[in-house]
Image 1 (cartoon, helix red, strand yellow):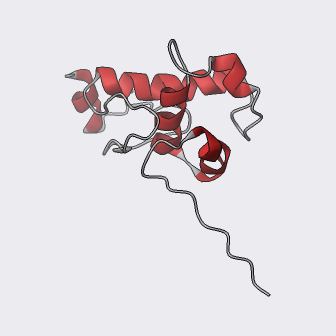
Image 2 (cartoon, helix red, strand yellow):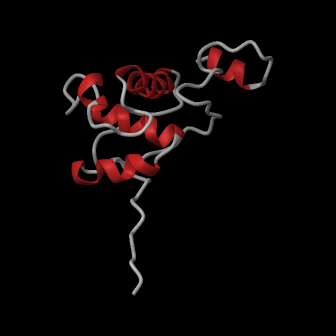
Length: 120
């Protein structure tokens, strides 16, 4: 007998009953978008209560805040849009480094992406 386990949809911000399944496989910008949609003023969680869910690599408020801040910065620079539960996630077409994009934070590596972020 085989067991079929459906893969969660990563193209939209999940409903609460699917949040943990999505966060098990979501990475990078998708994870940041979901965190941003669920955390903050007028949202279901704050950084601490989201961390208390115990999601691997998201169990400290500091890491939750880093993912949230990455999406927030992408919004402020025009590379992403605010998202809410049920919204489609449009992943920014911009490289990611774990828990924040160094190019977003003022890199000095001389790459062509630096000017894209600095100019917005």
